[in-house]
Length: 129
Length: 129
DNA sequence: CTTACGGTCTACAGTAACTGTAGGGGCAAG
DNA sequence: CTTGCCCCTACAGTTACTGTAGACCGTAAG
Image 1 (spheres, rainbow over the protein chains, first blue to last red):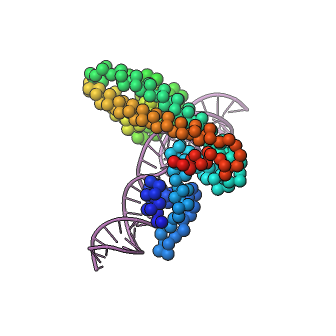
Image 2 (cartoon, rainbow over the protein chains, first blue to last red):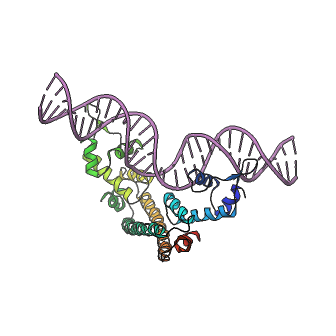
Image 3 (tube, rainbow over the protein chains, first blue to last red):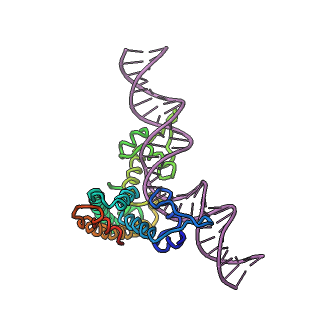
């Protein structure tokens, strides 16, 4: 499979795959005689894992750790649990923060009753801290 | 007031203030005879507005528009309302997405019961997508 | 007068995680 | 044989800053 096939199979941009190879998330790909990158089903699985982990908000460094774990199945899984748990904590914090933001923003938006800027509560609301 | 004073007054890094000047969010500052930037209370208010708008998640471009509006009080405030409303929409979308992420991640975390990586549901859960 | 210290200056590199573009080559179909 | 799509490398651009290097300024102490 060439890079375009892998890209379609995993819904990833071609450039992104090459980028993942550069930063070591994907292994250095084998090449066809003419120099094009060649992939297997294992690569599809690995890239799917990466994409899903990224979609879950794991940083590339975290993904790197998770992949290392994945590749050493005899290790204890405590490290994976730690990474995931601490990530969950930070997601819940972001969630709480975003909720506050949403509420404040909703207030700002609903405060406008039209008219001139000089009387507009939106601008005022943002100016107040 | 010198740049350090403005920085303290608004809880902003000195470099960030110079950056805002570069991109036109803050006006080009007046200088003392020796070439140091000099600020007034108006600048404190303007930078506070910027910082608060940024904290509300407005992009620098959106902040630029809001400031322009702020500086033309005779305009209709419809544009401000539009910017704020469309921003609210995108925040609500992010919020919903983050909630899904949180739930999925919570599942992932609770699926681990210790042991070796080969049996670990965390890795498996992330691999499934 | 000199030295030390902290604040300020410009200018540029680095961050995260890609995305886009330029300029070139390969390969099968019409 | 040329058209068109895919692939290659290499590098610039994105967002919103943050950090650093090397130099200058202003004030206070010795």
